[in-house]
Image 1: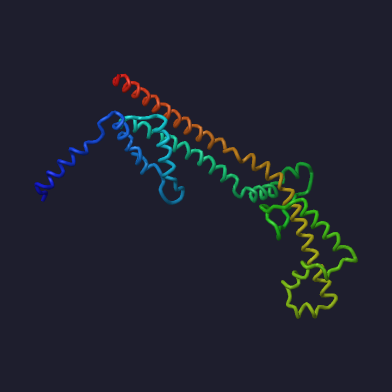
Image 2: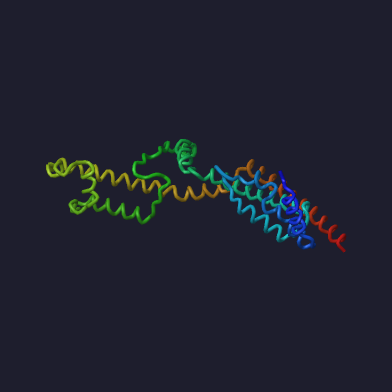
Length: 269
């Protein structure tokens, strides 16, 4: 139960702290609600996939408050509605970026499959059906340079020569160690060693062919990737409609805010 002393203490505190009395103080107090935001809790995704930065949203509101200088709860509410629509516009940009990212991610494999499965271009020219080469060492996502291809071609050319010194080829030695024990390698007959050299040579030829295949697709992927940067027509239309709606809402709320501020200024004068 509240005592008489507590009641009297509360009365005295109320007399000391009566809130802002000047126009400037009341204007500052009116903006206090913006620190938390009426819509922030529901608007900002606070956890899980797609988590958003609450501080970034609060900063957006504060910047709008500084620019638009609202006074009173109605003006503050209009400013936050403008902030909400700006936040949605930002989401719309992320949506567009995500759609483009989805087009670009892993598109190489699907384009390669389509290219080799659909050979209508080759057939129309009377050419034979072009089959997809087997890829054992490289993927189409790998990076290959012209210099690497030249170095591999030069290495193979040297290996084809009669004077090639296999004992100095460290990669060939590693190839043998991966397949055989040291004791087995020491016991190789000349024929067995020749067969191992042939297998290794075939692998190096395969590597060169795969490098050339990956390189041949490099420019093609660049062209296809540039086409995929733009969203499809349906998605682009949806984005434009949402963007126009949000922008209209922003300008509408700005107009109402300016009207309220003009009325307030006239009344204050």
